[in-house]
Image (cartoon, rainbow, N blue to C red; front, side):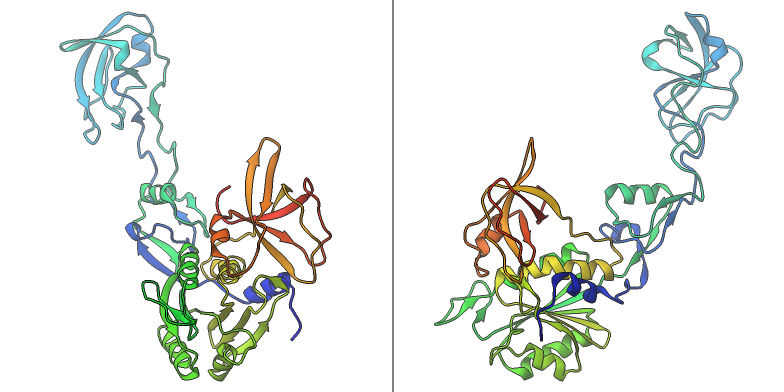
Length: 402
């Protein structure tokens, strides 16, 4: 099977993938979820003309000439409107958020007054209509508050609540089942025997899936035994996994069993082997309604492939927008000419007065996690890209905020 270009692999990965169905969730459980429909205002905010300050509600015509003393006829704390109507030379003590009394058209802030028992002296001029939040200033009933596809951050949740929405229509979170494979792998905290190593990939892949809005089902480490791997695949299917992610075992060695097992379970292979570095042995197929993504076993390759392929796949399933966020940067060090595989080079990007710069790590072996943990960007080198000297331009994908 010929090496597939990264761009074509991405298109085939998400082709025909539709967002998960809608579900209603309580507002208190909606943080980080993605809206499946627009959210409308179920009320007008503010629902009445309200005071924007603590002070006195007055008629502007009564305080045109100062100083002026008015009779206090009542008060209006928030939640307890003044029941009467304001007449000539009268004032109502009012507090922020309280409805403006009938007859009043202005609020004089308390700093511009002198209280004298049952009366108040207005000592500073206030223009008509000042310090009032008019009905519907923020939004009106029936108005669209939040649009489909919005990820519900704190401000969005507060707005939905203010619009009197107790439940929100969100996209059901996809379920990702993760299966690590390899006789050599042990979970962290164990003492490795001869030839064994500590399994690390799954934790990073699970974190990427969770950050992408998915639920994660960790099925642990499977030895290089087809029947055991098959059992875990069936367990994922029984749990309703939308995506099965396998770690390792997707290459062409005698002990790389993932392709054999998944096709034996009925998977239709879409592509296998990508023209990229690291991550060449990436595999993708469909097992009924479940998508199967076989990631390389090398730790860096596994995580970079998750950034490049798992993230957009989960974004599509979760109803979220997605972008590869390619940015221009100036190289701090030279980079050599590239071969037929698209290269993703670990780098540190910096913001300078002249723009972004990027410095590649000198060693790029796909087993070296320390450099990936330090990197905040990937320099993207197209197939057959020529050598570029320091000071030349490149394109980068941010891995986190720069």
